[in-house]
Image 1 (spheres, protein in one colour):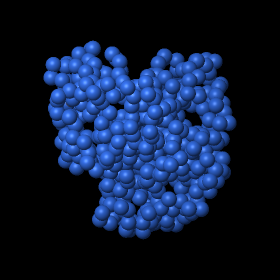
Image 2 (cartoon, rainbow, N blue to C red; image 1 turned 60 degrees about the vertical axis):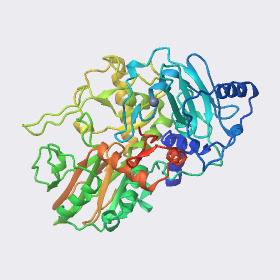
Image 3 (cartoon, protein in one colour; image 1 turned 60 degrees about the horizontal axis):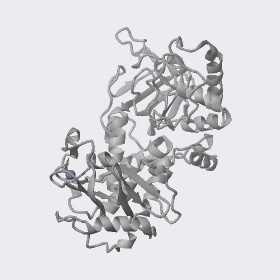
Image 4 (tube, rainbow, N blue to C red; image 1 turned 180 degrees about the vertical axis):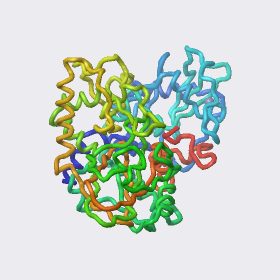
Length: 501
Ligand SMILES: [Zn+2]
């Protein structure tokens, strides 16, 4: 099933980032464009090159002029021809606003210095030139400001057309960033696992492997963890700050209903994500069974929400659309001292997306939900929120949608609880698991006896930040690779052309 899941992951758009990165492998500059008419434009621009300080040319990459992209401009935009068929257009205001020269961008703090609102509305290039390091623009301002934009950076940030639309090049090799792998029950044959020793060792290579597992599969085991709260807390803090909630910071509990939540009972819990009642549910949950005495049961259930969503999308697109658009309110109200609801209180859809065909539509909009309009593409699935036990009153549905919505969650529940989707594992002391709470649902079977669990939440931003820093160290990035020799690009340990900036 894992093989099938890989196919599915390609069919869905979760692999888009990776393929986008692969596209960038095209650079630096393998294509030999041949467009005589526009060539002359670029040559003309170069011929007019001003007397200002020219960009120092990289000595290590002797790129001949005919290998460079073609550049031309009109009153509003600059066009860059990557090859004879692929062009990107950039508005003058966009280019000027994104200048990364030391006057416009603080190379150490990586913050904008340029006052965007002082850029004239009719800003335009005096000249544009294709240089080995990138597009050089001399602006028509009184100071004849010169900006340089590396080719790889421009291609990565292309919005007209979006860089994701560029055809991948078969010669491009993998950039080391794994694609997400969607999985079903057969993940049990080789679940992603690292050892405690690896994660805790100096040098962070094991930590990187752990977090890459989480990014790729949505969870990862850690074996060989000393079965103590102290060791588990230390393990959690390898990733980042523990996120304190109403359940405490690092939690260590038994089934004594110490907190008003079914997690603190011996009841079975269906597959769910945590914190549906938060505006921003925790990113990762780490848990570790410290002991289980005098009873049986209490298997752990993991379900890949992205996999189940991909099934639903192909089999029941209408249901998928409803789950992607109808917000679901939720609450945590079992403690008299706390009453949590997300903001806005109508909540968020079960399936959260970004970058649909109408980028600005988001999850906002009208006050009633479920209309048949808006059948545009949902965009990329980025978050699953599902805890039917915590759901509040659905008083915001259009009457005609009520039964359709219940049918939709019935189909969702059927796919979630299918044996093909469910990965059951009996955890034992010494094996901790970390779960991406925005993707993988967790649950457990009922149990008897006494179980002691400990664990922690870690915010999604802490996790993503740690992973990004580790990728800077351990993974190659095509844009950073292509820009590393440009003068003044790497300052204080990080390039001004980092694609996160
Ligand atoms: Zn500048």
